[in-house]
Image (tube, rainbow, N blue to C red; front, side, top):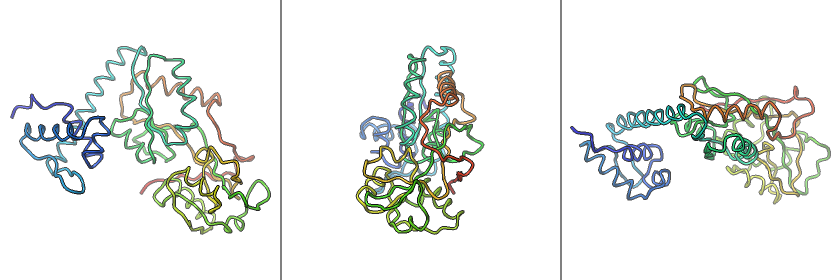
Length: 319
């Protein structure tokens, strides 16, 4: 069998379909047309002489041989990327790229100032940011070599190198007509409001329920909402109260009331890289810039409890 006609674009198409589960999402990811993806897979199957994908009404699925081939294809693309990084090593900091994976609140409130400073120091280095809805997507992007640096709230495993950049306190948001005096809210007062929380499988929901369980409180959610802005909007319309991290809540509507929890809760935000990855000078320069800004207190910090020792730091992990 001759493989001279197998192209990298065909392998990228196969890997993208395996990741996204259908041709249309893979095409969007690769920024090509769906017909180009279909042609790439058809040509690949012709060259290899095997069927790698099973097509159906509910998407595309890897065949058994497709499963084995896509594993090798990922390794080939990773090695090709390593070739590029070796070239960047030779060029030093006169070029290169840093790919960042983040969740919304960090991408909105923390990363902009870091990017501005990084571009001031290294104007020749390109930086891209991809926003993910959950920490699992960020870690998977690091594993697959789709990102060099990730920002996460989950306590990472040994396959990642991570360090803390800031802590973000959780607050209670109350509707405009709430009558709760003082800076903090009692458990009895909180129980008077329908609770609006993220879905059960969301990291923030896991963190909040773990926190409530540790303190012996059983508060059920009346609404389960994924988007932070929707959570805040529902509170602003008087539909209930929510427990949310300060950075995730911003910008706050002027009519929403904010109170501290009876026992402070915070999430730890970390920067993570894949431990076994070969990082370019550009990535190391980004990490060093971030570290220096963290140590200098130049990153945005949400208000903290007056007594940090009283804050309850909860670490959640995915099952």
